[in-house]
Length: 124
Figure (cartoon, one colour):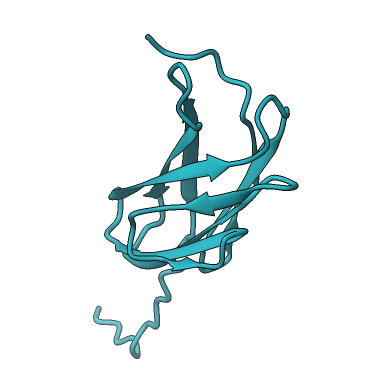
């Protein structure tokens, strides 16, 4: 017995996902530095957009090739599946103020918000 079937259409759904970590580095009198790492956890390669917002009464600076306005930094990274991209951001603010930075990455439909307090203990 032989059965002939027509073409079977299969659609593979791609899943957008990402991870985000952030650490604050401080040492003595230096301004805090925010070290951010975004990782593509999708089932495919993709373009990640990472935005970092300055704390109230503060501004930001990075050496990365990003758009910088002083209060916002926006970077884009083309990342393969599983690949990570680091970004270091220096935070200028009034001394002694307890403040926070907001980090927001996106990749396709995946979005995250990470509110990072700048109160880390200085490293030695």
